[in-house]
View 1 (tube, rainbow, N blue to C red):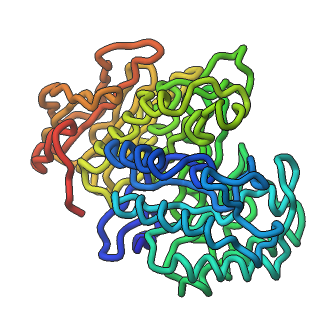
View 2 (spheres, one colour; view 1 turned 135 degrees about the vertical axis):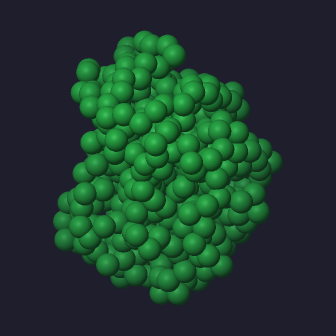
Length: 437
């Protein structure tokens, strides 16, 4: 099972091995896919180096309509009367994901079932039945590889809302014996920390930065990284690939470049992982079965091949190619302005100074305080976040400040500078995975 690292910044396996949270938003997979389709999707995500699948038990769209096997989740919309056949399919799906090495981040319910600010509803939860439903789920999935995600894209607007979430979280742990981590999925532009940071049940914070172009995801992570008590944090829902920017098709659709900027900005700012999303995948768009939601326009079996879904796995490989649990944000390493318009530069480094990774969102040159890193001599690579290829740039002698110019510039020409203490003999960032501390 997963746990929080000793330094409270990361997630790790039970034996202490690092766990990079790389999730996809498959919110409605329980409702919209049959088993052949679900297995096809999960195999694709496992092959692309995802580690987590975010999915919902009681979905937002179609809650009252049967799933692909003709089953509804609850009898008479009663949380105390779960439909065994519906959850038997959930059992199969979770087991299938786990067998492929994927952890399931399971939302017991979408938020419209306790706060119908929008969506289909109905509101069905009270603190009492939320606790009972949570305990039932916890017992059922006690031995599965899971993370519990409370909330579901809704605001906490009252003490009763907060008490319902607290009761469900406590019920889950009563049922599973505290085996699984717990977090909260907030609405767009908000963090779980806004309402839950001091809750004793919360293990790590989750943002939803939302579906606009050029969102400063790094600022969102910086704010949660700086909170006390210290908790791991990540963006659980950034802009989806193929989502209309700001929900308006006239603004164009987000693409893989938007995905990369959010991902590298967040992870280099201190996130313990990241979530990818595709607008067509979360709803598994199939117009023959259900109409599209908010201007989705690509069938999911086509959208599964969008480049962003592979490029986030490249980010995971880069992070895992260097010592993991000592990685920290490193903006003071930069001797240049970090942002000019949307052309952001974000740095992360090893706390011992053995390496640094610096992301330039549009290939803009930048200056680095090399004297803040270890080693008389450093090696440099230019890492391509589109392909995972690394170009060796030679040795860099010790000096105070040096300017670096990426291989190309302009929108879509993002690059990562990899600086290593030459005495550490790390592998090329484009070749292998580091397994050390």
